[in-house]
Image (cartoon, rainbow, N blue to C red; front, side, top):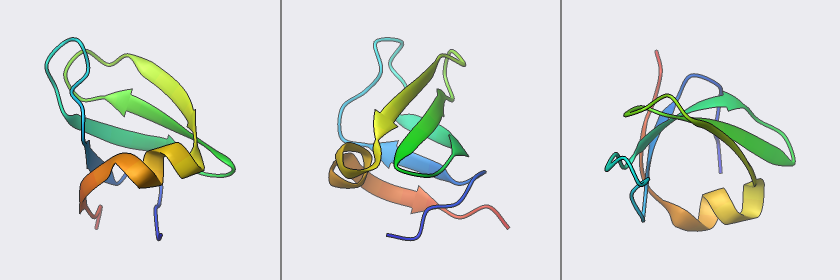
Length: 60
């Protein structure tokens, strides 16, 4: 899957703040995401993120 820093992704389950959208901050074996609702940052394995993606908004 072609993920780049700055892309906004929509995940299957919402963050506890209610937001489904996350900004990609770092890409590698792990992916660092920032919640668009509350700015909380998490680092997840790439495989888990790719499995839970429901949509991608490309950053131009």
